[in-house]
Image (tube, rainbow, N blue to C red; front, side):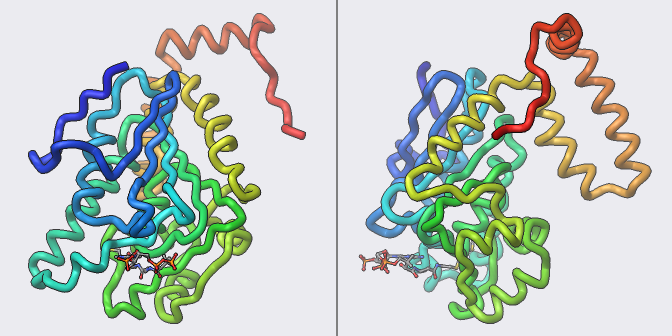
Length: 270
Ligand code: 1HE
């Protein structure tokens, strides 16, 4: 498959801060700036956005990881000092746009978190759809200590995962949360042993990529919108969504496959 990425905003010549590999229907995107602990500078942010905007139609799921000992040390603080107030506002909006291409893109994204998952690193992870932590992962929001605030959508997404109270405490105190506590708080779905995150992500990604595209579309696009709606609006959109999804030929085939004993039962994993 050729990965013909078009630059977003004409900024990029290449995606050198990402390492991208494709295995059948799964794309693996690795933040690749380990010497700076994958701190996200403007170039990396644009490259992430470019990658998700140009997701080839053959891809059905993506895995996001970080190179080196850490997932991501957050915003590249070296780019922050010279910004004016207006530039700060617009910079945050650039992050919002990039994170949106991940969360509201076409493919489900699984992040594998290890080592530091700090500030903007938590914001990137919270824009993905499933988070897997390796036991080395730890989380912090040191924005309070740095005299800044979250700017990559974290104030919206992170409280929906761990609650406003936990995020408030993390931001006020700089508390560092380990992988197990992160799971207890609801930030990740899984905690796995060191170096086991990618294998787990592959297992999930292969399964997710085999869902019908319209069903994955409904999960990614309708669920978060319904969560923002009134109860009655939510029921209404849900009814429209199931009507559309179940009307697709691939859905009808899958239901027939089950009824005619050609597809697997629901079984709990051991
Ligand atoms: C960086 C950054 C960075 C590392 N921006 N350069 N994020 C933070 O406040 C986290 C800051 N980073 C750290 O606390 C530590 O670097 C780590 C715990 C992540 C890793 O420690 P360590 O000992 O493995 O590495 P190091 O020696 O601290 O860093 C290696 C290099 O990466 C070093 O550069 P060098 O040129 O001296 O080798 C560091 O300066 C550089 N580096 N992290 C810039 N973040 C959308 S708004 C989001 C707001 C935020 O994300 S605030 C949180 C920012």
